[in-house]
Length: 98
Image 1 (tube, one colour):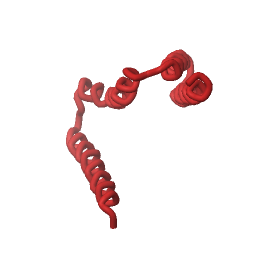
Image 2: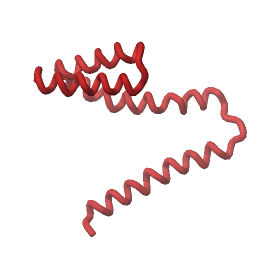
Image 3: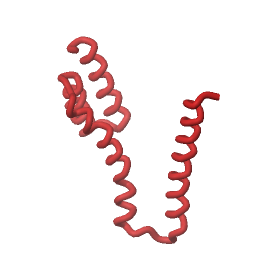
């Protein structure tokens, strides 16, 4: 088997162990402090920010248009509508604007 295959397997195992480890630690507590719970609830937004923020440093008009549309749709629509609107605008803007 190739080295790439073993790297992927090792990465999958490491990811699984970190996730299950966190679950096992938290499950040992009967009561979770509200601040800890609030912090854990903020993790998905923090991860999303780390994915979007670096791209904005090199963003062109297509990316900025998608960001604006996504922000506007997020005020009224749900998560799926926000994602689809941003993706559609980004694809169309990259196709026609450049």
